[in-house]
Image 1: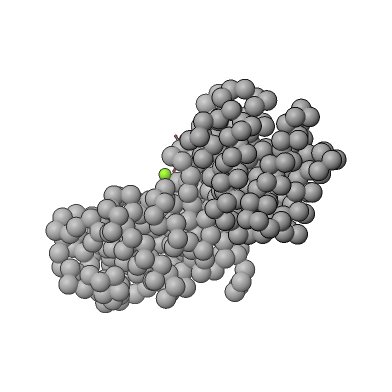
Image 2: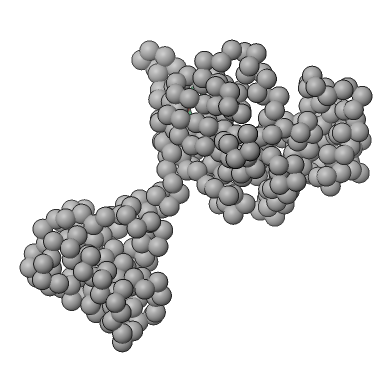
Length: 361
Ligand code: ADP
Ligand code: MG
């Protein structure tokens, strides 16, 4: 099993409602999640994150496509096998969902009582041990009402991990916490996940915790996108908007700024003179204000840095002869800005000219 996917999703689709009200929520989701991986699932509100997480947690029936947990197909699975899978998963929710009438250790022990493979009399010592691991040994006999938000969420972690699950699913675990406490909570999740070899999936739109992830999955309208793809696309939309509703102009701006950025970054070092040359070139040809030019230049560079080589291609559209001349001259100006036209820069200019169909470059 080692090295094999813990969760394997292929062409998964999900719908809510039926008939006229049927809504397509998840579309063509495919991904494999490996043992011990920490995956963060991001995306705007309503993009389907919770739906996907509850499907992976066997809390909701998979309808179409394939969703395998530990190699077991959940699409069309019966209640018993769903339950079998659920026992190997720990859940953490946004609202900690602690039972106010039980003490802290009793809340944690609940997960053990519900587990058929663990002896009842082990529940209390296991709960105490797990509370110690989250730094709350002293709070075992308190009630949830006596704890801070961060402490409650740490109890939530203890409860999720006490039965030694192989997968930990967390839905917006830092949403109700301040910045510092949220950070502590995810760091703790990561530490315990590593120690216990648990695969972790965290849904969040808290950008401040993205760095705990081995991998980031991004949902947009129910479809999976790479994060870099999402950023590149947003940058591209913004560049288009700078064209002020003139489609010709916006095509020129986005293509031009992108080409300039490619040349400037061709040798992987960006000197201030190159940035300056890009701004001058954009300023004299685009009709944008200085502030807009600054923005366009930074966006284009972000887009180039983030995109893997072949994700963003220049689209061919006819430019006027003047535009072409300006275009090529500007590319050379940027390449020469540091007083040195390198081989990499020259090659990049040739590639761009080729893609755009400028034979004379
Ligand atoms: P997220 O967690 O990314 O905010 P959700 O998975 O909760 O997104 O929701 C995705 C979409 O599905 C939303 O449009 C939401 O309104 C809808 N939705 C969520 N749960 C249900 C449900 N039980 N029945 C019908 N529609 C739902
Ligand atoms: Mg949600």
